[in-house]
Length: 615
Image (cartoon, rainbow, N blue to C red; front, top):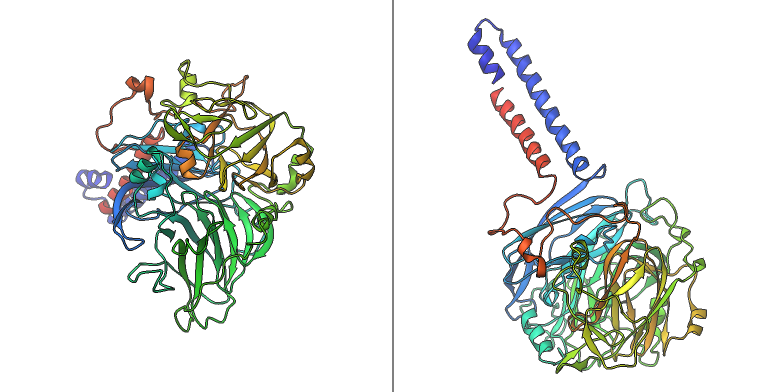
């Protein structure tokens, strides 16, 4: 515009002067544009970079086991895309619910420091209604590692809706191994040909889900390694590699409840990390991964590639002859492979006469105390073994029991009643009677009941939680908002004498642990993260039937430094639903508090384009 006006006022101006003015204007506009890029994250969140993504959850029809069925896709893909962040990044995820029912996305292992408002379970968030969108905003503060995200409501994970979530080290923090030649994501899990609505109807009817129809690897069915067990025409996963390389493979069990043994034919798996903490580096020929758990291994492609190789995920602790079809089989393909893979699968662990083999493997997972995690200081610098325990909770689970004429799962005889309003939102609005702070610290000799009882935990306490499994199957437990030290596990009933077997030096710190049937697992937790945090069974059937509670952790001297307030875009439900503004279809604008900066960013971009055209 300046060039055009100047030209109309004085035709005697030289072309060179016009070009100088134009270039100056372009330079000024481009500087304005770069300034907004630099300021966008800092004005919204502070000095750390921001990762933006959109996730559209919808139904698609696929046939992973040869039978067409409806699954939950993300951005049209099943499984969903990787969210890739770096320590201390801010993450902004705009979730679009294109399903026909409510939706919440949870981020297990992402600790949401000071910010349980973003955790994505019913005790922290109101659901996102059908055909609405909502933006999660959180920081991956002081974290690294391999995680995944998934829908937390209505048994939806049984139909998909999951994807990997990676937090990389900052460049200034070295990883405790040579930089891998690539990242490979593998999502394994048991699978039914019925969708989540049919499966939850089965549970609501008081029935067990029964044996799964198969195991998927990255959303695909098994390679036809056996024409009797596997029908033809099934789309299977192929993972392509180059010889002489080292890859980091991140494996997540996203299934309903089945423990899976993971192995790659003729290859070792060098364990290096689990759920945000580096481990002592140990080679395994196969590894048990339980529902909800994540591990990363280094895979060296050091074989002669005479053929491709099997990748197998098979059910553990079952009758092998009856569960032959419950196997996921993919193919590892070398770029110089001389032919397709053939022959029998690599065998599963032979521990029929040694029931402690899997437990011993779990015990062998130790923390790499000399490695740096998200911070420069070594992971072993927190001397958890010398801290006094402030409270002990013995949490006992059993097989489902009938309560009010329906089957329910319990912890200490209480089956959790799902909330209709998030707990901290209720606190903020001074609502009473929403929940009880009377969760028993040990099993009670009383009739099981359905209640909304949560643990009144003490801020800055250091607690011991004993997970006692009197069920007949492996039960896996997860705690949101925290990592905990897995200091011990054994068969039998836990007693105070069991503390003598605790690992007080290099116990792995993680967020999901298995508890073997008829056994116990002991964890230690340092309660430094204020909020309401879900403690639950990661076996989806048990979680759905009520095997969960929450830890309510409040700083009595709160001044805004240890807990964030409700976000500007908070959703309202339950007794506060009249406060919710209507959303007619998907919102075109982001619900971020920094939307003005996005607008000015776009304005700067438009100015640059305009000046380029004008010049």
